[in-house]
Image 1 (cartoon, each protein chain N blue to C red):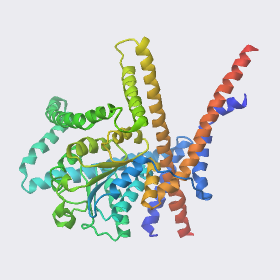
Image 2 (cartoon, chains in turn purple, cyan; image 1 turned 90 degrees about the vertical axis):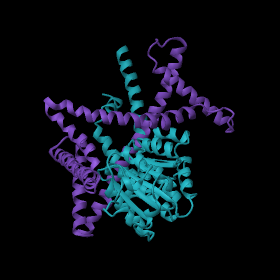
Image 3 (spheres, each protein chain N blue to C red; image 1 turned 45 degrees about the horizontal axis):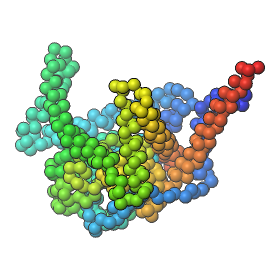
Image 4 (cartoon, rainbow over the protein chains, first blue to last red; image 1 turned 60 degrees about the vertical axis):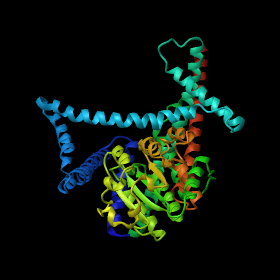
Length: 211
Length: 279
């Protein structure tokens, strides 16, 4: 293990333990680690965007002859007009371009790529060849979708048949929340395992190289 | 104060300590729990396993360093299977913080194991901002979006890239992600270009993406560390995820026990207080 690797491991271990120290209570070491993380992330992001967007996607192609790129470059520069109140309206030109462009792209991709395939997958034929289990699951999917949608229908008081269906919808929502919560616990514990594993193997392992 | 009241008012730091001990215990006393393979993971494995020799597969590193424990084992296992299958691997990331360097580090490490050559067997495209434009643009020309690879080498100088112009030349896209980018790989790339997409996502995100499996928009899904562990077993390269699942299972048992204990304490305490009110 080289000296550089050793320093890296010890810096990582220090910041990991500094962040974990918050579990006991808020403290200056935790806050120092938090501020360094925020500052480093912001600095890294600015540097990366400068290189990958301004230099690689704007400046270099322009120097290579793609002069038309001055138009998106100017549109981007107009966004900075927001810092001056008198001319801040100018930034709306760029925003209008972004909004129009985004709406156009997402209208197609969301409808064609998400909404329609999901509706199609909800309305499955009962005799589709999957047997009794598949038919039963198809019924549960339709029941779940309709009852959940009815739960979110607030233009009529949830009474009678509407109320009963909405209550069924709540059950489906609760089951979904339970699944999400279970997975969230698993995700958070995984992150803890990753850090503990690092501390145990890499950090404590590095001590063996020292002593 | 009864024992039940004491349990209900237990300082949360004792729970942190118990969780920490449950995670550390298997490191001191080695133990294993059986891991069962779920259909979604097997589907992903089979999809890659059935690819013809030398197929081009796009592998994304769309995750931040904060979720490495869940996502990196997926990338490692994916690269193992892809290189075992002799696939050409094209890596990229839409995540600026960490993504490019993680892709570089992990891919070079696994490639070395299989004696794969950079530029011939695999290429790292690196990061480009504005993922929607990147995903759409690669449908027309990958080189227009990524004129150079992550190290600044023009794509035209890399032998592997001579036959890879756009999505038409890619057989499968394996998205490893810890954010909502998976939706765009499905809604833009799979829906509009018809390329099969499989994914490995963090456990927090996994429930949402089961609907894509149901609608057949996604070919296989790895959900969190559990999914990664199953995939490692299928690829026959047991790594961090399999090791982590022992700790994961112990903590889950602890949490289940604490949830049951908390509920028992809640009802017992309430019953005691009600009894107290009667006297």
